[in-house]
Image (tube, rainbow, N blue to C red; front, side, top):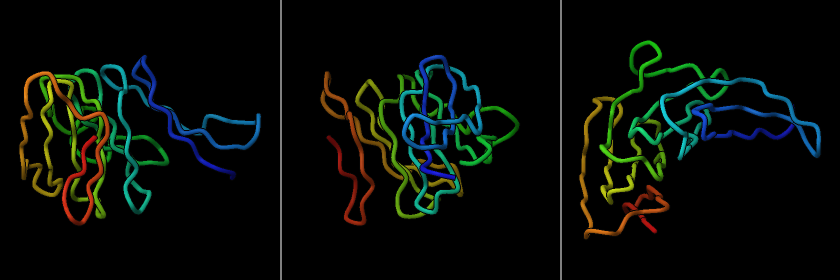
Length: 140
């Protein structure tokens, strides 16, 4: 195994690639509902968050890309009414932050599938990048 790359694609596919230089192989592939617009790997590398143009969040096993939270092949939750633009795990696999095209930013707790914080910025602005740091949410 060489380096690993996680790819989110406009056709709804998520792929795990391994290799180096010009030699890359697809190790796993999964199909989600909507274009994959944001990915975040958990701190321990076991889970991959995928946010889609449908506003869905999916929590996948990072090696098999099978849904590891939620039921069956369904997304974990329909989290936003607008496309998800950015997501980021915190220091644990239990918290993450998501940002949508309509400007809404949410802090989630996975163990209870609840929103811990909901931010709605001024009209016309939205986050393009997020970081869940020990001091709070960093948004750009």
